[in-house]
Image (cartoon, rainbow, N blue to C red; front, side, top):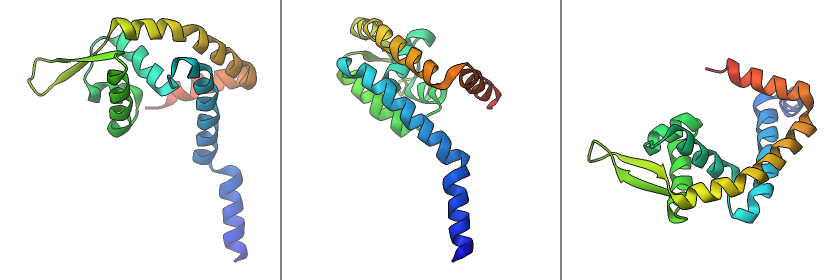
Length: 143
């Protein structure tokens, strides 16, 4: 029993996956609160920005770029399509659908930028310069 308790304490206090998930949830909450006036979440904003930046993409390509599960991407994409912020057009292959930003999507993206800027500045303030550099270094070192 004591060894189980010691192991549980070690996991609770030191598990990198658990710690990173806590940071991710806190970060998500900060951005989601900032974007709430637009009825938009940070994951959805990220997908809109990717489509805007990278051009038309399939749902699979978008999920791959975002490094999220296809099922998660599908739920967010469905929400963005229903809001009229993304449109789905036929691709070269009849089974393929390409996602593109609509004019309404461009507008909500433009309206989201100042809200995102404020959340970004707040997070940078919270984690400090060393934390910011560590995050960029970590992301840059991942496969």
